[in-house]
Image (tube, rainbow, N blue to C red; front, side, top):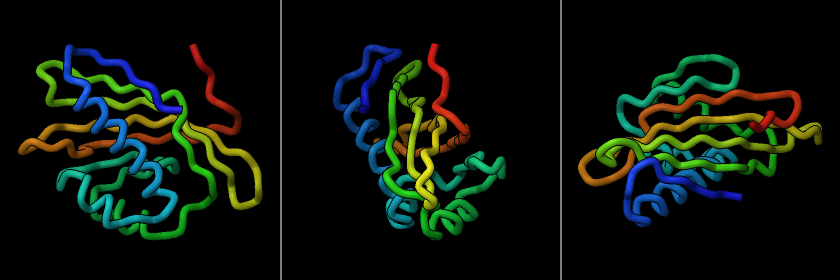
Length: 137
């Protein structure tokens, strides 16, 4: 389930756009949708992948073209923070999916978006996997 909080007094339009970007980020990973990522990652994008690799945009797009290593990927406990003057947003979320062997898989991610030329682009991301559901505060 996707929820949201706002750090700054921003219009709900930005919040809805960011939640939709988050939904599509997860969907695109599951579907290996390189086109969506090509359109929504900044040219200077970097990601720390679940295996610990630091990948630039080009390397990430090559990796995401491979089949997703599971099924039923889902974001849980999504929190969106729109920062400062409203041109930077941070999305924190848990996720769960099912590995190809049928085992449940869990993790957390943080995506950082920046508004550039009037649209939100993901500039950085960090993913971690856990053997069991992540702890909550």
